[in-house]
Length: 458
Image 1 (cartoon, rainbow, N blue to C red):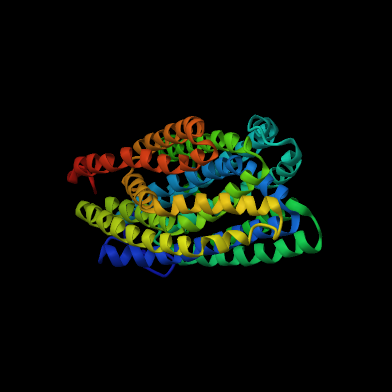
Image 2 (tube, one colour; image 1 turned 60 degrees about the vertical axis):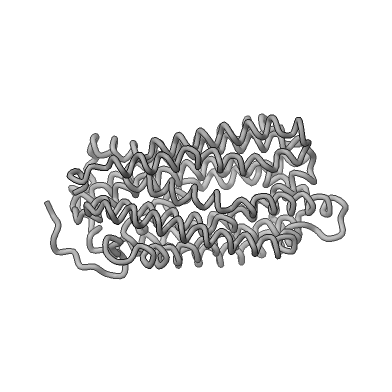
């Protein structure tokens, strides 16, 4: 078994030695910066569409957002799931097996991307109709989706490439890739939407071009990693290995699908409250990425950290890392909460045309929703860290169950609370979904970690 001869370099780093607090923070910071840049171009997308194309265009993007997120969530689920085994093999120093895992994962990922492209293009119209999207904004939303779904192989390529780098302990290069993508997307948004007047299609095209550049950058750095210098025999598909990769990827993809279906049910109810309410909820949902930007980064860090330490046979470090991750996450969530409560209304106003009656109504809805989510952020941050730690040690089934709990809580709240509290009731559906997931994840973590047999960790 090949274990020797790999020289550590900037493109790959181990998280199996040193202070968990320091390692998690240092690994998370580049990911966080990358996520901030990603959210920056999401915000610019939303602001340009809202300011230039109006409230109806903003509402159209919001009305189809959960469908888009579901497809993206499936892609991210497969990519992140596949990377769990990569992190374990890297942590164990099994570089020959690592190359085989990466090669098989690439083939599986591209096959999944092609299937998703065909299915999403065929089902988009039916789903948008089932979501009860207002007729006046339906064509706008469909035009946006058609272009994004055509580029799913590109989206998969970027997500898998970034996941491979993170599994190797490299958070720097995905950050640079995201900076490139963000700046490209922002510039092209202004060119395509404001100068060329391509409407929401221009925003979608800008996003895909940006993803192409970021994918190419990540692939270039993967090719420079000594442990991933692929040989012909590495590309041989192995049924057992593909099956194991799918046992990691499928539950995570299914988890994101279930969460998204719940979101689409909520969106169906939101769509019934009119264009201004849809626009307000959309504006806040676009800031959702800012709210969870650090949580997502800590989650990726915990997956890599727990996976590498599992592969290295260092059980105690997994528990130490979990305690450090929770502490860091809670402190961060409080800071973001304070910032959103203080400046959130001003930020939300950037997405909406000025001095329009619909805009004022939408802004009131948006800030009310943002305030509710901000106060409950610690619940969300605990969710991300706990779920990712469990996934990193190779259990993707219990996190999938937590996704089902999210679905039950989110849809139950969306269906029942508006009956008692009107439109305000639906604003609590997301919070209750987080609580439902934590109720599964927290006891699951203690159950899994205490049952990991030390003799099987190497």
